[in-house]
Length: 136
Image (cartoon, rainbow, N blue to C red; front, side):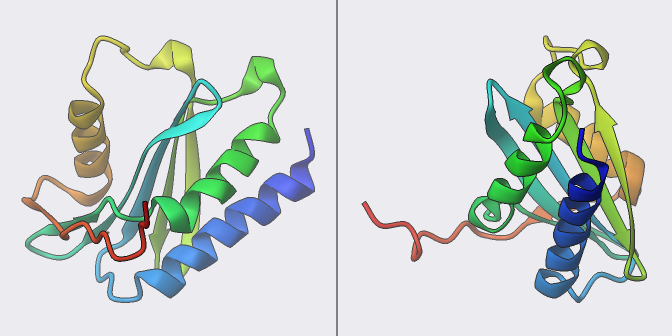
């Protein structure tokens, strides 16, 4: 396990969140889930006093770095979900392992629980998805 590379990738994710979501007043949370060697779920949530704004249109911005980070861990220690919380330009990361996840729970329900545990029980308003950068 390359600790220096892991630290560098976490720093990159934190810096990218700060650059892409500078408006956060009560913190910004990245929630990513990796399953079967691919990023299955990815979202960024910005906390405000009275609401949370969710952005699920961030796959292209963060997925490569998330997957590179996941690959840094030995197979026996690969996590399934990570959260990266940014507050006042400082960030902390939590990794959740497959045995600690209820796989019968819907991904959306789990993500909601994770978001409110970090940013508070407030309404979540999702930004619209944009198709302008996706070409078929």
